[in-house]
Image: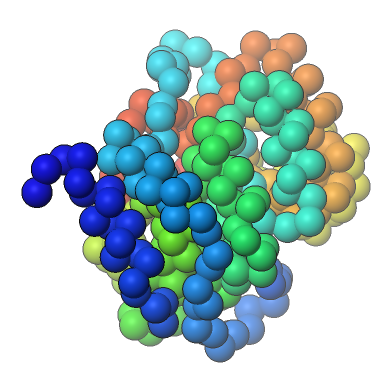
Length: 263
């Protein structure tokens, strides 16, 4: 098949095929079927071309020499995510968003998740319903990851390469499944505890303790976290930090199945 014909073929396939909240309690939720998402066929074709060209497009930062920090946001997209994206765009800052499949499905039209991709941020898999993966049988772990992969790829045309296990719950079984799914496990070395202490000043102070190579854990579903971000960005910028995505932090796409906490 000619290279130029591949996006059109994939587009035709996407049109013809009928496609079959975050919480802090360790409770199991029933995985609900994915409903077909509404997306303009021309837009989807362009995204397929972009995907073939390579995504995400990494900027050239040498984090072995620069003071790099990766800001990561979990559990969205939510009602405050768009405001956060506006702020990051205005500061020319890139981050990594670990999205929950059910939250993506609840964002009608997928406008937020598509903007995350369009603005150059990295997007990662945070499961479908936010269960502790290490407590699930293998087939459920696969289901949690594949449901979210399916809807994100359907809406954006990109293939996620990183994931974050909810609650940091992982083991050898989870590692094996993420390796099969082509996903690196991204944890963190700085937890702002913004989900527990929803105080803007407290979140900003904790995030400012980042060190070169840190992966900072935040949640874009909380208003107080988004409110804290201007101060976080100002403080870390004054300290000479460069804001990068997780893949940019390592200078490459992290290895599937492997666990990362910092550079």
